[in-house]
Length: 343
Image (cartoon, rainbow, N blue to C red; front, side, top):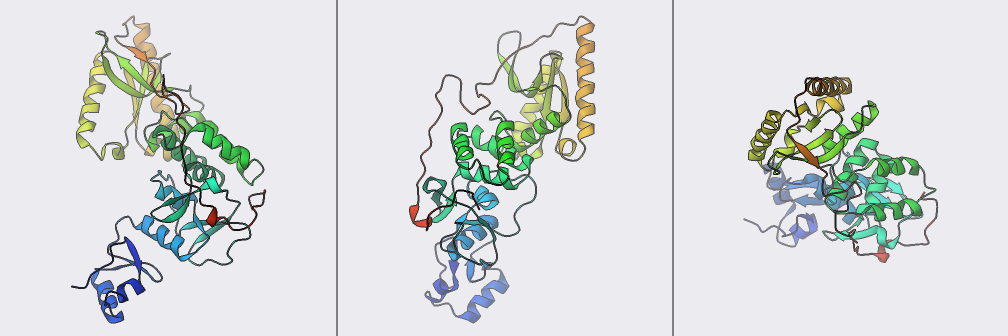
């Protein structure tokens, strides 16, 4: 059996250097031993295909930088909504001309906007998030920003620096709005989308990730959302939330049952309500509010107390200073004097 290159993606020339003939390559493609990633680029399998396609596009176009949703893939940021049909690249305003098989953006890039991942230039996390805010939906941008802040991939200071730098670029107000709506306490894209839906529905704003304390003073669980006025907890129950640890789903249900025994009222929803049927989400939350009021009117005591999350909305931790990130600037990918309008 002929040897394959060790790299995740490789060109046909790399196979020929190892003794592969064109007919042998064709047979391997037909048999599924090789996968065509892009014209002239192959891989041993289709695992993580979006990442491999993005890497191939960057390697095939010198001077171009992976950006927007392709950069989000490289940074493992969640993408809510439609995924890119072709890799997204950014070039300097006076950069390369036509690039086939890619969606090309033309915008100024500074040295600290770019870093290397798997040997290819990619926009930094902060620049990627602002680009998503400018060109994608608010839901897409907020979910990605929440994830990056929560996992300390970026700081609010870094995002604000990019916003100031790009203050007069097209659609920058959309990115400003996405940053303003972001909250590092969200632990999943569904929580981010739910928070936006609750805002759009003009429901009272909940407090995210509040910790419930039982009567003995022990932590009894955590609310995705909490409305103290009504004594109501909101739970966004997305299946993907528990894919890595299915047992955690059962434990979470046990914690909720324990809190219900302590007279907490819950409103529960999945992806369908905030994404497709927001009025159903509104109905569920308002119904929970009414049940919470009925409990309080009846004189039943609340058998729990709460304390806020240790994570703050801007991503800082209680008692900890903000993290400072270090990027690897790549001035060799910046050819030419940058324009100031981002075009």
